[in-house]
Image (cartoon, rainbow, N blue to C red; front, top):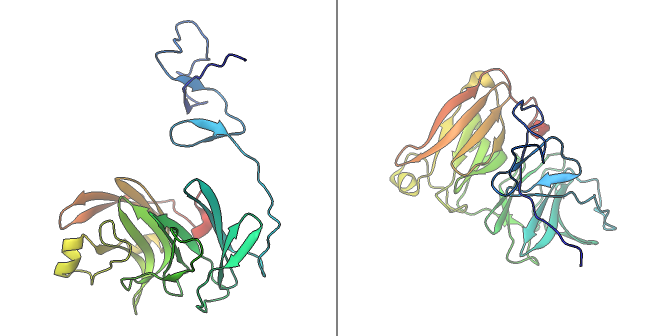
Length: 260
């Protein structure tokens, strides 16, 4: 049997003048990470580099071209969800199932998907926010409980679902609003005792930076991308819950799909 050796590689830092080539004098492979000068056909998964798997075509098709999609892992099995002309679909291998749940959605809207625990949340900024229970793959999307506002984008920061560019009867293009702690289905009326107890609330970002376009998730903080600026959303707890400050004053996202 061929002998193999596992080497823990560090970050890809091709522009770092302190970077050294693996195997150079003074480098100890057993005591430090091996820096990378180049990385091809690889993906970083948070703890290790893995071989990039090429795209695989599916023989299943939707009735109309899909607008947006996400692939999630459920007990080690990959499932793809996509939106197309106001319908939501589940793609499992070659099987495509309409899981819209009987709702009639806007046929021209683009969608954003976000996984939160065992729920897959979907929003298009026009219709109500939906959720799919990933513990029941034979189910369909249903209205997200708790009467959340409509949001054009959705993200997860710490243990909160965060909606951006919201509408609750009044348009709030610069606003982000978050759910109760660790509960995507609880959205108490903001500024009430119930909201404070659940650490739920909202924040209006500076309008000079334009609409909220995208919410980049994080464990302790998130980044809110507006059209002409970026705001850092830092969890601090208590009645305040999150602290907000401007991270970037010139660059943002021209369109919601510009984030990479």
